[in-house]
Length: 491
Image (tube, rainbow, N blue to C red; front, side, top):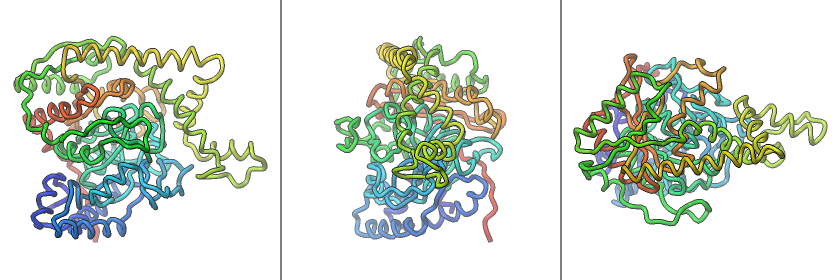
């Protein structure tokens, strides 16, 4: 039996009944990592000794009957989320040797639950990218087709789950960086409402947009993992004080009478015909389940990418100013003076995409241009949020494609930043409005590559979002899709 292929909730039952031990499960997953990782390259670092100690502790808890949700589950964490004593590179050479002395709040919660942390996953440098080609270490490959990208920036986490190299994983989402790779890798990815999950210990890209969330094999696992990491944190000033509901309980609810909004702006030019067909089939599935489908409008959608690519780089320009070679991270040791040291450290330590966005953001914030660019973008952001408010007066959830195409070939868009940015055209609005969004698989294209269906909910309506996603998943059988990755066992 291949334990690595099972979901967390299936494994949880086997662990509780002592059919398997946490150590046996971890060893099975690491065997899969040994065989698949040379092809997929989902990880930046692996922590087998630490994970084994965590699995042994989990077995003690299981034997004592004191296990929590997640106890003994092998977990991958994106390499911009701090785990004490473990390298946290953010996919960048400028932080190649940085080891944080503290845990991110989400890591603290996972460790308290008793998970085993397998390792830290590859990512686009500082979460800036949609393909994981911008990593300062290596390119991660899509387990469905090794010549294709896994999406980004949480491509390592998505690929690890899709390949069976982790049971579930954490990623971060600034403009689609959980949902887009989830769609391209045929798994489930949830970007929570801004403020639901603590950002403490997440290395900042764009502070008003970033959120940590789950990447899982099915919606049930997504609900379980969200249950562990959600909740107020006094260490994060943007964390919202509110009770966390039982997300699993929502999965029992029918979608009979649920109003599903279809935004006409998300089905226009640039949408691949096979993706459109799959999403339209999913919409019909909701009607069969008793949901009411209504057309809604999000009229400022056409300005979303421009708005995002002013706000996010502006915040990145400010956040990344700290990487100057003085306080921590890489320093050019050959510089003759302080100014040269700043310039050479940042020039050598940052990759091309990070430099591009720092320059764009610095320009947008500069004297004489602030009002014309950054301030105007914030005004449009308000209009985008108002669009959603008006749409949700007519519906309960909004449905759309997650991405305009399926996974593209490695290198295909590397030289065309605008082509790459268009991969996030349906996801950036959710971050700009601070809403929750989930991507679930909704079939395969003619080349056998996964297609993602996006559902968007009201603020803090993750329960209803999971309810809608689960109903579709169970009816369509999308949770049974697995990447056909063939690898040779070592030895």
